[in-house]
Length: 300
Figure 1 (cartoon, rainbow, N blue to C red):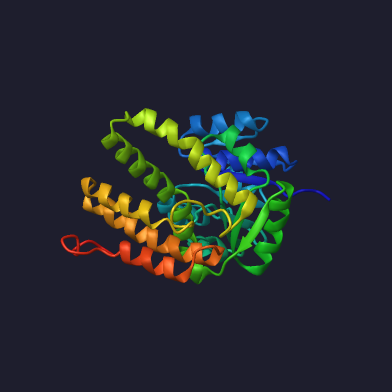
Figure 2 (cartoon, rainbow, N blue to C red):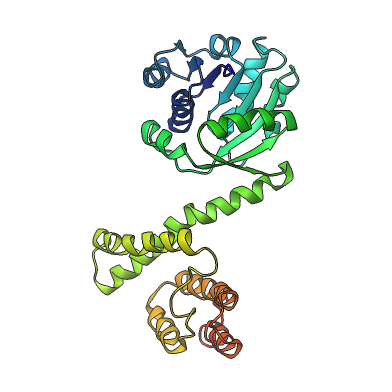
């Protein structure tokens, strides 16, 4: 079966990684367009040098599938500009890569007869070549018309990927979940490193020391799943250690103390689901994690 021709508009790291992964999977590329010609040419050099341009029209007109990989704030105006050029034809498929925006950002293409879809790779893509490697076997979130989802499934399968389908009204909640999983993980590691600085451990040394621990936790999640991967003092009902943590954290900023307490309470519920934590122990830990005078002003 002949694969559909693809065009890329927006040759940043994410778009370049995706078009490279699809090129490696055998999809022909009709053209690459980007804000600057240099950016388009760099991407094109990775995929056999198809036509590169700063004008999307030539790339779009020869493609069956158009990937709009511009920053979120530029997706709607870029799509509208392409539609205004009169190069969209019925039956084309327009995709954007935003995790937060719905396919409605491509309404101007849909009004011209195109299928529209939000295709969000659940992966951190900072480099085109490494990103293309990471995309093979990753998960993709799809939201859009039924026909667009059906067509896009073949793209994902070509990269050995997996699919999540979410309704448009839940897209923001989906993206919030990913921010917690990825962005806030980095924030938590930064807090941990800051606390180690108070112990007297240099920041970079502290980061290098905790990275294997963090990697091990991720490996445990992959191997054992939730809630079985949970370890630590809350999981084993170690109230003595938790009390010591709380006493020591009086040296930490109030926001860090509040975060420790809130995450601790969520961990109690996870530990109960895992089993091994008795209800009486859970209530003791909840009490420990509830601010008492003079800390009663802290978030509990």
